[in-house]
Image (cartoon, rainbow, N blue to C red):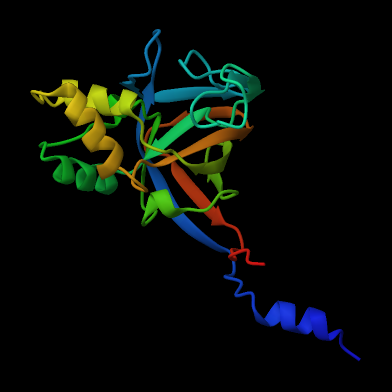
Amino acid sequence: MPDPVSVAHDATIEVQPGRKLAARVAGLYLAAGDHFETAAVERLSLDFGGIVGDFHHGETRRSGGREPWYPRGTEIRNDRQVSIVAADELAVVAARMGVPEIRPEWVGANLLLAGAPRLSMLPSGTLLFFKGGVTLKLDGQNKPCRYAGRQVALRAGMRDEEAGALSFVAAAKRLRGLVAWVEKPGVISSGEEVSVRVPEQWIYRV
């Protein structure tokens, strides 16, 4: 006889099946200095610490405002090795802020991905398989912050940079792209094909 608790439990959970999407690398960027702003490159070399030579490279990082459960500066796993954005989402953010454009470099993006609809809504655990052999695993959304917003305001020529920074935080909510870490290292090249593998999804309720 079926367990009634299990039957009732299963009936309340709607599971969305996993799926595959085809995407491609539309741009690559590297922060080679001591600032998060990136510059366009043709290739990125990745190891288990992330992008070699990048500002955010490292197998661990220091906690900040995104991790209020730790004292600031606590050493934790670096799940923010790679920043990924989409051109259509940046265009929406720019329109909301009233600026002509927002370039991937201004917000410190490393990868401009084309072909994955509603990029920022891809769930945690999604895998990106690059044709050249690299695999990235998505940690989750990249929450917009005033640091990136201030850089956008500066580059866009906004008169009030602090107001622009706050505007970015609101305008970029759930449109700021994603952060990922390296599961399988190698080299990513501009224009490369990417297989996006979205896992099963469900909403956890109790």
